[in-house]
Image 1 (cartoon, rainbow, N blue to C red):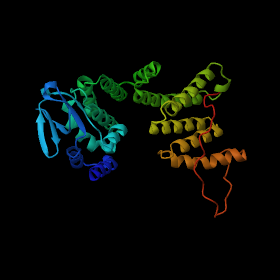
Image 2: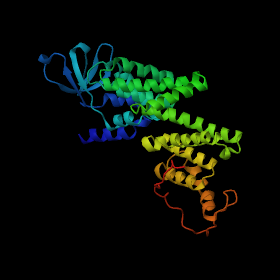
Image 3: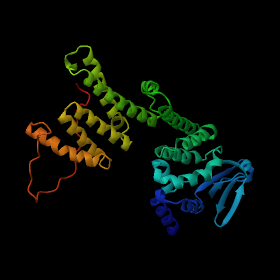
Image 4: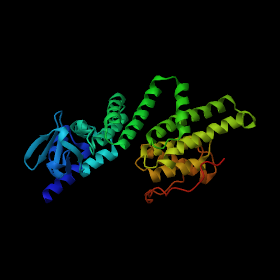
Length: 345
């Protein structure tokens, strides 16, 4: 028993690095983790076994060293157990898990209509991972099958949401910019939080549009501050840029990549408007909350002259950080996030 548990723990650690062959072996060595109920109760109570794969003719199951195939019309419902590695694959849906996710999806895909099957969970995780690698057509094929055939209505709804996200990506590629923007605003106005991926996608898209509009209106109207008609338009683009940039970290902080990117984009807005103190606040939040972000190194570099500017009262281009002795203590971790109002005028 101890050896079996140890094997499960080891497989969970390397779940994202599994080759297809390793994932296939893991499927066949799961032990009696699953539960199967007969469609005809007179055949006996539910029993435990390891479901290896769903074949055209039925489920291939294993108990001990014995394997057999159960016809689908004999099965009333199933309940899949999950190893730690399988839970990780489903929950995180990372591109590096694609080889293992594809094996699990193909092994369980035909069991989708069976009550209790979790094949759709692996399919949705696979679709999200494929979306991250821009394999949109393959991902769309998978979610459409789940939306049509899955026995669980909640999973069908999740598949529909993922299908909507993929469809918007296709719109972004194929439609005219003004049509894409119109559809994006329609999504944000609906504020459908049941599909956070789509909300994150469209808010990121619109943030870039609003920031570009902010810069354009200032370039075309150098004296915008004195123009009663232009200033409200400029201010609207400014506030929308920030609202959209900060949306991920405020409402979906666990979406780390999008949240970190949003904070970085907010810093760019403040840089453009020469609000040095706010740039520093946002970059410090970025480093405190998302230290592993792709923006971290650049954020640390930017903070040095920005803080020097605040301390000296000189413009960033003229400010120089105070020289420190060579044996000075290394910088500690970034400070905790500050509490400040990013939306005030």
